Length: 345
Image: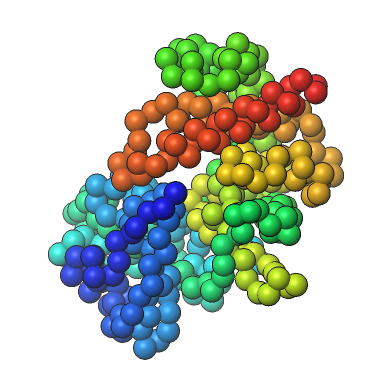
């Protein structure tokens, strides 16, 4: 999916001023990072102090605003050593009202206040959200065709995230507690769009709902490991020459705590949907963590299939019109894998 994002001159003058005030210098050049699913600016801004990666969400971009503010809190709280660009600061800015408080992380010390505002009386949905990160000079994962060395790196990177314990506190919720009612909703409601999916899935929806039931999810996803929870190739940048390649992971608004295998399994439907190897091929090359329960994997794939099917049948969220089609292709890949796993079991 290709998205042409707004660039620095497209921002309102008051928002540019707020960002430059926070940077402490005038922006002299910018490079936009087009693509992705959020609608706002995502650019490397350069000042006399050097480059900074900045992304924004505007009033009216309801989902993007929500995710940016969640990411500000979570990125600032990531454990040391997690392969991610360093979070620098965030702002909530009222268009035309100037700047007040910044949420900032420097040198490992964080002061996170995701409700900090530029206008104390302005509702959050009427303010801009601005996030700043350390810029990363990396390349995208090679997907045309898929580079198997990059595939292996992705799998190892997902496992590496799961080696870190998730921070204590309320910023990172438990994956086991996250409501995923979509399988039961599909089984109960049988929306008309289901007819466009694999008949096997439709015929076995009651069984899928049982596999994805809350008690099964609670057992499958329980753990104290860090989970990115939206780990895909397009959220990874690869650094260094091929013989020394390493990856960094971006976009952390969904991060949680849970079982160490969740990110590896979660990335595989999107990979296969976009022309990459089948899940079983990836897991032959990079096995899941020792002790992973195969039934827990089946539960996660059932949850993913239902989540993507249900999501694909909804109206697109404001500002993210391509999301439903991406959910559709992931749903189809998840169903194919679920069918394989359930037949094997």
